[in-house]
Length: 275
Image 1 (tube, one colour):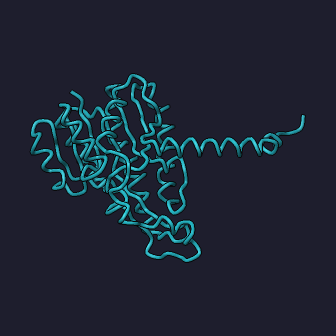
Image 2 (image 1 turned 180 degrees about the vertical axis):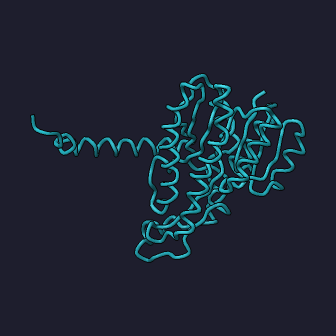
Image 3 (image 1 turned 30 degrees about the vertical axis):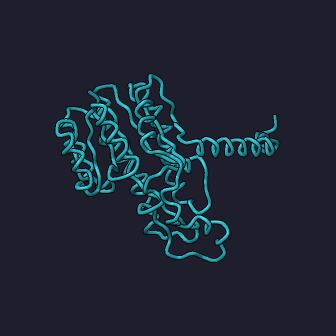
């Protein structure tokens, strides 16, 4: 039986994935900063679910959660680093404390959990690590510079991690969702307190808008099933785009990048020593 360790299970993708994993009969360590928010999952599945408090920015909690998971189920087969949140601001508007907290959660917390789980996976020469990124990990939307930067960091780390772990039988997958009907753009989304008028037509167009919450096209339950299917694939992709909007934006981004590379190729190739 496969054991999943999933961070950020109170709502959204983490919750949907935990429910799907338990419904198919797997074990699941369901974690959230407030363990009460996931207690009913453990109550419904007393043998297969373990609900634990976990703030990924708290190293002692990370160590304790991984230790308890391994003691309960013997091993962690699939780690899902899902915990995280958004932050919107023009770069100049960004508040230092908020930005540092964003990176502590979205990036450094992910690193800490991964490093605690890896010794067990290495000893067994098997395992899968699923790191949740975003379409913002490929693109840089206005008003999301800091959030995009945190996800670009996840992408860069994951690419290197995949190559390091492949010879050890451990797989790494980066999930890049587009817009899904979760609480990401609602309660979970932070933004700068100050909105500078000069950015009204750029970053200002993407300030938090409660009216748009709940209108996103993506179904979290379908995303959860897609992740489960890909985790079980013999050769999963490094990057898994989810959502037609994510696919469209990625095609547009890559096309623009290639056009720019071609346009400036004459400068790019001009920098070697003359022979």
